[in-house]
Image 1: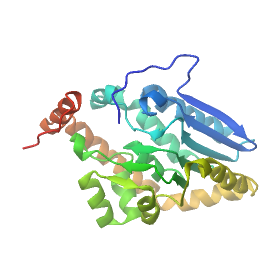
Image 2: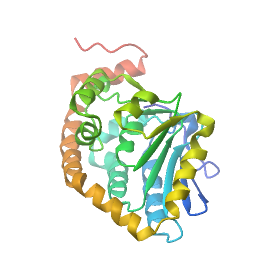
Image 3: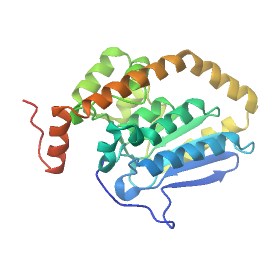
Length: 263
């Protein structure tokens, strides 16, 4: 998460797209803000995913980040706006789009992933991570709660106790730990990351597309309703937490570059 207020110009779109054969590569492109999500990026990624899903020439999509970060999650300069309905529009649109995306979606975690930088990996299908990359869910540190259905999906993937320790402590998770926990399939040197992701994506793209799509639908069906229900519960509590003394202290401490005091 970051408070960088850099805006993208027409020459610097917040999302880059290109095709490698039948693979659509989506690159988060706010490197000066560690690819943090603002409303523009939420909506741009959602639109790009819908376009990829509708394009018969695209069989697989890949998500990665520009520069040294995967994504720092929510841009803290817009964090306060998430206490009202308009502030979460882009976030909810993206999550709905991810839930409906019918084609295989792979992630290449090239650097640090904070907040949504981890929880988005619960909505992708196959994840790869650079050896030096790391993940963190700083929700409790900010005085809020998990999002993106992660209160259900993360224990489903990692197990309850491992998830509890990780979310309660808000510590960093290494690439190797993420692999052991089942969040990512493989870890490898950064220079080899995207070639490996594209290799797997291209292998999948050669398979019968309708059969692949239906296989994904069947696998996702078991958790779809529960994840949506978790998102609704999280959204209600997240909004309540954003007017809490803990959240105010966390934001003030962040701005003043000091440790928060929750005593």
